[in-house]
Length: 184
Image 1: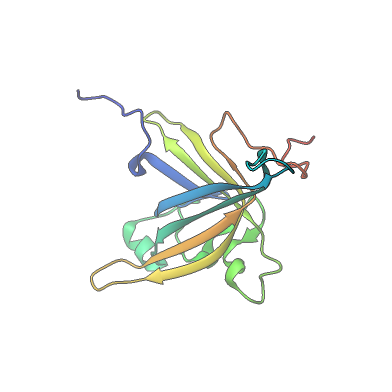
Image 2 (image 1 turned 120 degrees about the horizontal axis):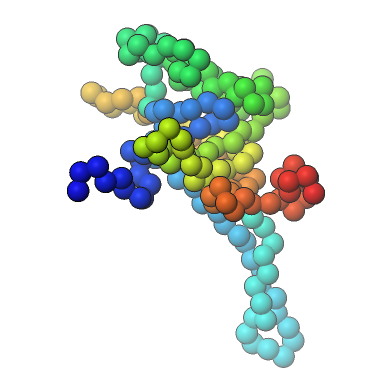
């Protein structure tokens, strides 16, 4: 059985990106899509005729194990692909949108803050990766942190988003935004 590659995705072979930045120490990513419906009733019937969708919500959370620039230096992180300044939310600069994700919690910058895309990839044993889930136009809504004696500092984030692509073959399409409809 040696040399066998598992065909299922686990936390050990998942890679998480926020915008253009790889979150090597992100863990416990969860997400949910909720479609709210309203019952349509008619006169003369006790049962509902149909349940019609009225809203689409995407939400989720993730946890990040924090490290500082000193810890990055001790670990030998270097180069553009590594975050050598520590991974505080204020260092999460998204080069694709030109925004700083940390601004979402800064009262002076909230209005200027930009959304980001959260993407989960399956790392393949070959050189490539495969997109599993892409959550588009995320905005953090909550940040909490915890540190325990002899433990690691962990920041937990909750977010809402506009759309979620379930995999690379079936992208979701928005109904009103041309950018989300592939330019339609």
